[in-house]
Image (cartoon, rainbow, N blue to C red; front, side):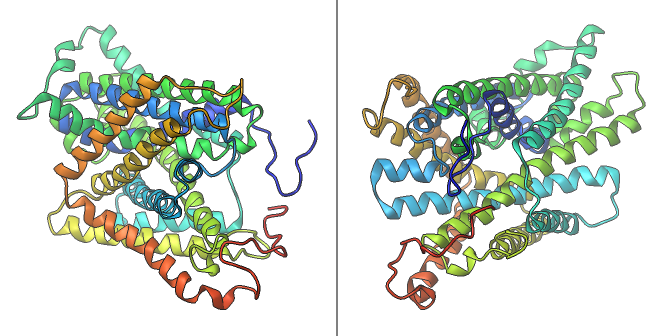
Length: 470
C-alpha cells in the first residue's frame, strides 16, 4: 500500500488490532472501579445491570459503526453532529461535553487507582496518590511517549487476565458445589426492582464506553468500511460477556454488602481464599493488575484531553496558546498542564466533599461522566438517523433502524433517570461546561490579537506545519 501523504494519518490498523483496541477500550477499568457501587444499587442480580447496559452500549456502537463507514476520519461525535445539524453551537457543545467527560472520567479512575494502590502501600494519603498519578501520566505525554495500538493490545491482555482470574475463581467455587445460584436473582434494594436495575445500569454504563476513542482511529484503519463494524460489535459483545460473567462470579462468591462497602470490590473475590493460592500473594498480584488496567484507560483520557484542546485552538475556538507544541517533544504541553490542573481541582473538591460526609468521589465523577456521555451518544444516534441516504455507497454499513430507536430511548431514559435521581450532578456538569465556555469567551474577545493579519477565525494557518512528522 503506498505511503500516506505527510498531512494524512497512515492506515496501519488491521481488523484484528482494531478488535483488541475496542475490547481494551470498552473493558477499560470501569469494572475494576465501580462493580461494588453497582452491586449496592441492585443486589445479587446486579449482573442484569451489566447485561442491559452493554446491550444499550452496543446499539449505540452500531450508530458509530454506520457513521464511521460514511466518514472514516478522526473526529468522532463532533464530526457526526456537525454533518447532521450544521450547527456550530451544537458542535461546540458536543466537543466541550466530551472534553468534560474525559476530565471527570480521569478523576474517577485516579480515585479508583488510589484504592487499589492502598492495598499495596497504604501510607500515602489517597488525594496525594491521585494527584501524583495524573501528574505522572501528564509528564509521560509531555515527553512524547504515546501508545500504539499494539501496546494497547498488550495492556488489554493484562486487563483481561485480571478478569479471567476472577472468572476462574468463580468456576472453581461452582465446581466445588458451594455456589448458591438463587443469589443471582435477589434484589436487596428497597422499592421497585426495575428502578434498581436502571440505577445499576446508569453506574455500569461508565464501564462500557469507548466508541469515541475507537472512532477516532478510523482514519488509521485499513479498509474501515469493512473492518470497523465487525471489530466494534465484536469487541462490545466480547466485553459484555466478560462483564456479565465477572459480575455473576462476584455475586456468587462474596456477600453483596461486602462488595458494596469495599473500596476495591473485585479484591473481595480474591480475599475469599477459594483457590489454593496464598491470599496475600493473590491480593498483591490482582491489585497490580487492576492498577495497570486503570493506568491504561486513564492514559488514553489524558492524551484525549490535550488533543481536543489543541484541535479547538487550531479552529480558534479556545485561546491559541493551547495550540503550542513543544519544539523537541512535539507534545501539546499547554493543554497537558491545563488538563492536569482541572483534574487535580476535581480531585481536591471531591476529597473535600468526602471529608464533609458527602458521596464517594469515584461514584460522583463517574455519574458526571455518564451524564455527558449519554447526551453525546443520544445525539450520535439521532445524527445517524438524520444522515440516512447521504454519503452512502455499497460498502456503507447500515444499522437496524428499530435497534437504533431502542438505543435512543435507552440513552434518553438513563440520562433522565440520572439527572432526576441525582440533580446535584448538574452542578458538576455546569462547572465543567463553564470552563469550556470561559475559554471560548476569552478567545472570542482577545483571540484576534494573536491571529495573523488577513486570516479569519477558524481559517488554517498555511505556515503551520507543527503536525508534520509528529
